[in-house]
Length: 434
Ligand code: NAP
Image 1: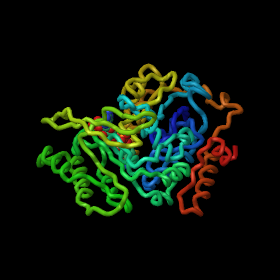
Image 2: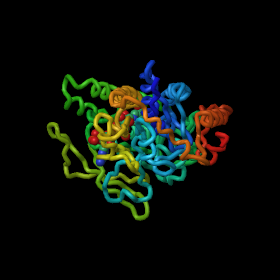
Image 3: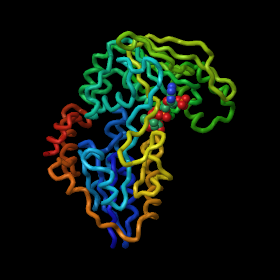
């Protein structure tokens, strides 16, 4: 029986699904010993620090991750950063294959004047802030204003806008970070405007997320019927299935009777950000009014200015580079998941860019693992692992993580929450018994 050692860097959905595909590919002749390396003291990646706290069902996939992690020949090396505590070369030398599953954590820039003003944030910072990611706990989120503008028409923009627009009590029984709850409770924001640069038919939202909006109990969600009618006229009788589902879901919201709630969440189409103005902080955003001309979206030359104190852009992500791994256009430079001429592979957003839902990573990882297995040498290297490089370093193993997990869940129980997240690294290590 040959045992191949595989290092997976990043304990998010893509990393776990890669591990699962390896576990499922073992046979009588060959098996895999998996070391999963994660820079945070906690695993689960975006399931912990990305998925919106008011969407707990999506997080139940963590049960699958725990099953993978407690299978034979799997070790978690949490609190270990590639590039700081160990190097890519260490992994490449010692392991038969190295799988980069570190996602895309940097927010794409709008590239417009005023973007760096105080009060202008990226969803790449705001989302991990409300989800208790240790690196973002001190983010300055300005909520002393009436209006916030969210840029982008994807599910992240929708999560961000919803988190700002809902009544904070709706988050009481969620695992929203305590520091974020405190800020959201004193928020003066009553109007959240989501601006999409193209038409409703081009929006990247998915229909289930749009339909969920009708469940907001304390917020008027405003989608203008005329925007949907215009979009329907443009797509004709036989739109693509996803476009039809989205427009149907938007109509459902547009047809809802208006209520007297003081909080509103409005969708505006065909507005592209041009400039953010303000002396010391964001005071207004200027957007160019677009129109659709055939199959093109073009500027009309007109502008619309919205007075606001907070702008959050949710326009996609790029991967943060790891030294020793080649990158191209915001992702690992790879061919079908393989970094040519190396034993390095990439899965998930690190491989394909920031697209797809959590489940997309399962089929994606399984294809990459097939390729990896087809390229394995006849015999394993037997070159050891990284444990000797980490002597004295506090490593969060699976059993330490289980202690953290239990402690967080127990802190949540009396409050009716799924967990209370610890957000300081030292606190997390302490909960883990380290
Ligand atoms: P996304 O779906 O790619 O959406 C990005 C949005 O940003 C698009 O509407 C895009 O508009 C817009 N945009 C890009 N550059 C822009 C610019 N310069 N100015 C104005 N708008 C700009 O990305 P995402 O929302 O970050 O989501 C990433 C992935 O995670 C998606 O696959 C998403 O479905 C998934 N996700 C899923 C869930 C869920 O299932 N509940 C939750 C969150 C995220 P154009 O189309 O015009 O380029």
